[in-house]
Length: 444
Image (cartoon, rainbow, N blue to C red; front, side, top):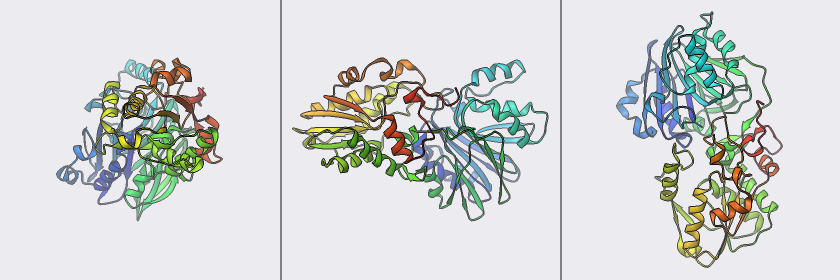
């Protein structure tokens, strides 16, 4: 669930890309990178760490150019290693090219084997590199034609940004699994995984790159080309459940508004009484506020979040996830003691974090802990870019709701229905991928 950002025709391109990546930091915390076009030559820098750790004033100053792309990484395919940090850089038959990719190519193993048999040598273990080897074998010396023919060979999810010496190219898979928005800042076109990054650079949102579409930005103009018949939108519903920033917009609504509405629907679905309602910071807060309003139960903050901790779900290893979860939440004891409380979280994937959270509430004297989950049980692995790839990691795939409740130590456990989740996220738009909940994979 990486974050990508790009901007064209702006003398402050690399600096604005830095700002855009900073706004997208929640989408990936392993590595960050920026590539810029300078005097018909690409310059780039990437490294492991957060955006403000990777870049400083002198590095940004060295990335001169009017066109730029950037990337923050959360690994799903390929190890957490600097060789997989993006943008990836290649000197190809089309000249220098840099690539930023958000998504997961599910036929990457098959394609890599075919390409290796043809003599391809891969410089990384990430699936993002495959497209370069495919287009390099295309008979045409026209990059757009090569992309049009080879992008349909990729199965799975992808939003790409390609930077060459003369243009910036955006492309999105035929299902639209991964988000890719674009806007304009004076004569500059801006591309980003979320609208919050477009807002961060003071650009005006225009819309989304459509599924199966290529957009070519060059010399202040934007040309759109269709490379595949558009399937119906299959937006990842987990964007609004957890990943996206509250001020980003999807389906015409802010993520904050969608989460508030989902919390309201959760209260309508379960008529539960308690002394107070609260949310697991930060994504659970909006759900709890919506629930509080609908159920007429007082909202109180029961956890203080350490603002300097990373997001636990997107840590590359389970041990790191558990450590981060322990570090980021501190219970407010006098609010908890003696009260029966409803605690709302966005999702329950592996169960270990919820177990620690419930125990901390009980240790502080909570009379009763009712756990509500603002999404259905995660029963199926995501193959499109969320790190829930193995069934054995998913607690709802192994245990019943009653057994999960016992495992996490809660007095009650309830999940939101899929219909209410879709309703809350889309307000009538039902075009979501919810395979992790339903098992209905759009590509099958």
